[in-house]
Image (cartoon, rainbow over all chains, first blue to last red; front, side, top):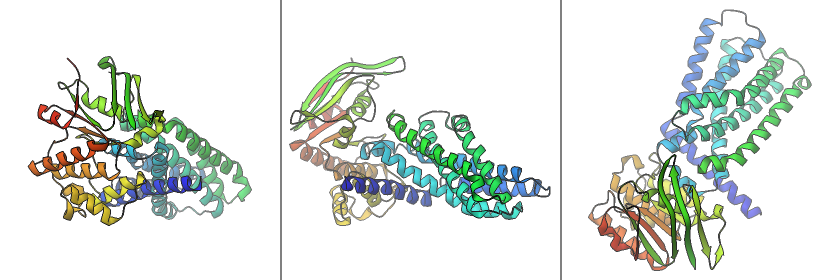
Length: 227
Length: 205
C-alpha cells in the first residue's frame, strides 16, 4: 500500500509539474487571469474607489474579481488538452483520478499566484483595512480551494462540448453560488475585525464544501474523462 | 499469453451507426490490419479497442493466461500512434518521453530516453520543443513514446503518415520487432500497408 501511495503521489506530481512547465512556456492561463484581474481592479479603483463603500460591498467585489478571473483561465487545464488533441495519450497513461488531482493542484497554485498579486492591490486601491488577518487568510485559502475544485471538474465537463465558454458560466453559477456567498460573508466578518470564532460557521461551511466537491469530483471524473 | 477479444462491439454516434456486432479474437504474437473505406469506423474501432472510446454495445476483453483483466487496468496494455493523437508541442521530445514513461511507471534514465530517440532517428533533437519539429519528426517521436513503455498491444492508425523513406523503414523495423512477441493492430487506407499484418479485417461494405 505505501508503494502504491507513493506511485500515486509521483504521478500526481508528474501531471502537476507538466502543467507548470507548459503554463510557464505558453502563458495560456496565467496571462488571461492576471490581465483580467488587474484590468478589473484598475477600473474599479477609478470608478467606485472614490465612494465610501461598505465592507459587504468591498468583500463582494473582491470575490467577484476572483470568480471571473478564475473563470477566464482555470478552465484551460482540460480545454487545451481537448483542443490540442493531447488528451488520448494522457487517458492511456494514468488513472483518471490522478490526472484530476494533478490538474486540481495546478489550478490551486494558479489561483494562489493570482491572489498574491490581486489581493494586496485590491486592499491598497480600495482602501480596505483588514482587522482580523487570521480569519481573512483562512477564508481566502478555503474559498480558493473550493473555487479550484469546482472549476476543475466543471472544466473537465465543458471541455467535451462545443459551447465551452457559455456552458462554463451556466454550469459554474449554481455550483459556485453558495461558495461565493459564504466566502463574501466570511471576508466581511474578517474585514470588520470580529473574533475568529465569529467566522467559524463560514469556515466549517467552506471546509464541508471542499470535501463534498472533491469527493463528488473524484467519483464523477472517470465518467466525464472517458466519455 | 495475452488474448484480445471483441464481443459484439457496436458503435453509434447519435443516430448514425458506425458498425455493428464486431467479433474478433487475437492471441499474441500476431498482427492485424483493419481496412475499409473512409468513414467506415477504422479509427473509432481502434480507439474502442484501446479504451479511448466506449462502445455503444458489446465489450472488449483482455485475458492473460485465460484470466480476464479488469477494464480499468486494460488501458495500460496499449500504446497508440495516430494522426489525431498529439504530443505536447511546448515540451521538448525528451520532456514528452519523460512525462509519459513516468506516468506509466517506466522511470527511464536520460540515457535510456536518448536511446529511444536514437531508435527513431531523432538522436540530436531531444532538447528541442516539438513546436519546431516537422510533421514527420513528430510522427517518429510518437513511435518513440509508444515504444518507451513496452506496450503489449501497439495500435497504429495510418502508420506511415507523414513519414519519409527512412521513417517508413524505421517503422517497418518497429512493427517487425513488435509482432515477434506482441500484438500489433493497425488501420490503413493504403493496401500496401496490409503486408505488415498476418491477418486482415475488412470493415464496412
